[in-house]
Picture 1 (cartoon, rainbow, N blue to C red):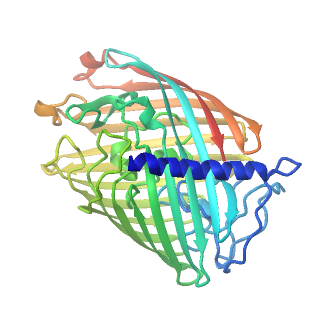
Picture 2 (tube, rainbow, N blue to C red):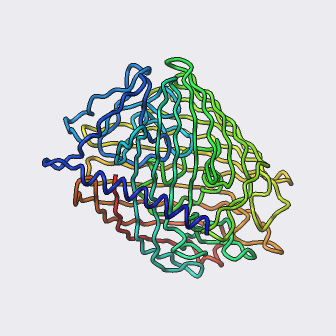
Picture 3 (cartoon, rainbow, N blue to C red):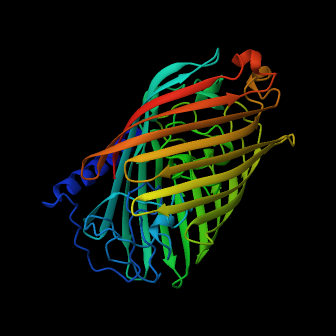
Amino acid sequence: MAARTLAALSAGASLLVLASAAQAQDHSGHTAQPTQAPAPARAADPHAGHAMPQRTPATPPTDHSAHDMSTLPGGDQGAEHAMTSALGAWPMSRDASGTSWQPDTSEHGGIHVRQGDWSIMSHAQINLTYDSQSGPRGDDMPFVSGMLMTSARRDFSDGSTLNLRAMLSPDPLMGKEGYPLLLAAGETADGVNPLIDRQHPHELVMELSASYARRLSDTDSVFAYIGLPGEPAFGPPAFMHRMSAMDSPEAPITHHWLDSTHIVFGVATLGWVHDTMKIEASSFRGREPDQDRYDIERPEFDSWSVRASWNPSQEWALQASYADVTAPEQLEPGEDETKLSASAIHTRRLGPDGWWSSTLAWGRKTNDHDESKDAWLLESAWSPDDSWTVFARAERIETGELLPGPGGGHGELFTVAKASVGAVHDWTIAPRVRFGLGALYAINRVPLGLEPSYGGDPDGSMVFVRLKID
């Protein structure tokens, strides 16, 4: 009941922002900018986390001590101002999911409304997908996925910033078993059997978080972040928030190596930033969410992680991280894990509206028996203009979950691989509202030991429509 109440409040706030922004449209069709209340020199954008794309890039300010109140390139008076992050003296376009970083040249969007001392931002994306996975372990089904996010930010006269964020997902509507996705494994639908060849749904409440940041100088800041749920300092940005991945409707099979901790029930993070470098540490609940996708689970702080991030230029974001995770799997309560991750993200601008973003990531999970399993991911997305996006992904994982052992535990270790390619076309149907139509095709590669079970090397495809409000 509490989760549904929180969801209703967050959804209502998001819809209020979207409606208020719609009423603020001027006669030219652009969003009228809200009147800025007096603010300290270091006031910034309200959204310091989950980044959704806007077709106009945020231009990093040259003076990190103050936000740039000029409009963005292209002369669109409705474009969002290039402003600094709520967590420190860097451009807001560097912020991704949780407290993770992406390149400064990334796109960052949302509909902004001013309410007294608070700056409120909302955006939404909903996908309706028909999924077809071949072979004896495949299945066909439609499903809905996406997110609705709202953040509220307040800047204080001493240069500190408070940022509140809530994010909801329609994923639970697809059912506890999630959607078919060959070679994927993790979590459970009934508390007894593991989900295999399916991607689990995410929680209705994906994030309820608060952060507080204090500027120490024009280049230094410290921050604290708490979430129930939230995202600890581990891995690259979650896949649905990476520019190289967010246009694809399917989850990576490397998800549980790289970014499955993006929803944990209980996280506290402390961080220090110096210019383009960031060091942060988190304490969090190691257990992954259970099969009830509508509740808020009890917070615990039994696990920890550290992450170092470096953006050597505006086009690059690098990170390396380590996590000691207590009993992540509900079906294996006595099995702990350590995790390692390293990634590089490159995002390049192409003309006034185009971009090209790529991610290379590696992850390793090691259990209590010193069994290590590696995963590799390379993905890329290319958008030549504000209408088309082409995306591709290649992955390789070592997994013992595709043929479970006795009692549902991990079985024989296999190395499997997957490659997919797709495209989506967007049409602008109203200011800040776009409708998209897309499709993808995937090929899976399994070793001889799995071929009888999978019927050889199966393939899969998805067709989807989406609605984006940002």
